[in-house]
Length: 135
Image (cartoon, rainbow, N blue to C red):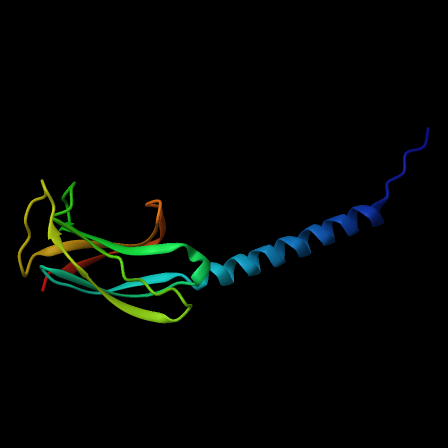
């Protein structure tokens, strides 16, 4: 019995798969690149961020948590419901409120700030964490 391989067909399938994968990665990369958030400053009662999201990203709020760098719970939390998702960069100031059982932090303390663009189901679309000296 003679066995032959159809190398031309395998090469064609491999090339087609690679091309489709590359297109998928490029499309996904551009969609993800349009949704971002960056912490600008952190104070005892507000957190400032710059963010961008596309209208189809599903973002419904910007949320923040502030706490000591080694804390297991946030000292304060906040939500900004006024979010504009149009692909452009925007700024938001998130009002912070003390957390129920968090350790209070004061101006001058080293803190960890976490922010996120969140959808209506509470799922983080994108987020960031940074260390700051509280203003």
